[in-house]
Amino acid sequence: MNDDVIKDFLDEAQGRMKKSVDATRIEFSSVRTGRASPHLLDRIEVDYYGATTPLKQLSQISATEARLLTITPYDKNSIKTIEKSILESDVGLTPSNDGQVIRLQIPELTEERRRELVKVVHGIAEQGRVAVRNIRRDVMHDLRELKNEGEVGSDDEHRAESELQKLTDGQIGEIDTALAGKEAEILEV
Image (cartoon, rainbow, N blue to C red; front, side, top):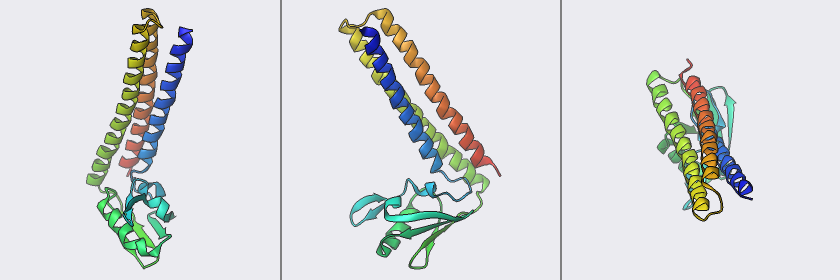
């Protein structure tokens, strides 16, 4: 019975860690690399009639050219608030509009801006690593509780902890691999 309980804990931990890694990858895609991608605006939230709403729910975002994003708001009255939110965000782009559509010209990245973006990506990766480590900590706590309650033996607990550590190292390795790829993409001239 105790092997099944431990396996359930480890399976749950693996699923939660996988979700953290996937979330980190999605965050990476929202960092600008010099090419236009609608994902650059995923983190932008707009104060829409008093409610904080993701930009992608208020408009259609498309990459019409290699270095141009167009944002077509569903409500034309929200253009000013969308522009304000883009200006206040950390994407570093200046919007222009014609009353119907907002255009974001994506300039060539300067060396200084590339270094700043690498720092942003490192911060995102660290958040992902911390999330994975927090999951490990929670599961370790649960395993210790099982041992203290006498449901599993000390050897089983140690075996499960080493298995959990391998799982954690593997997931953090995936984050580091994704980080290296994103860093190379940003620094590519």
